[in-house]
Image 1 (tube, one colour):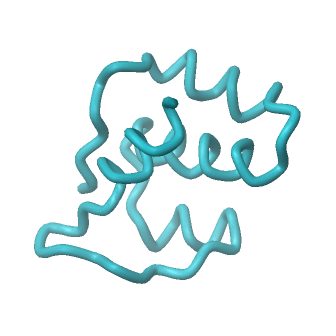
Image 2 (cartoon, rainbow, N blue to C red; image 1 turned 120 degrees about the vertical axis):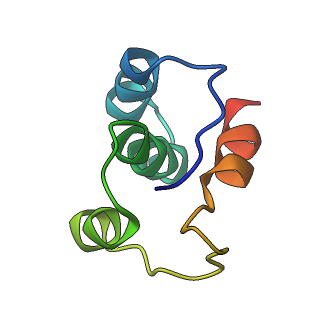
Length: 71
């Protein structure tokens, strides 16, 4: 399972994924939101069209995305 930094709630991530005015940010929030729900990377990649790259042992990559998007 990926590690998600918990500075945003799952609900807040979902809201940002749905309401972001920037398509790129919305997709990033969607990926983080799905991972925060406990979905596995392969499922998130299949759902969103993102490729699984840059994985670390244990499957986590989301902490960097989360801090980058939270701005």
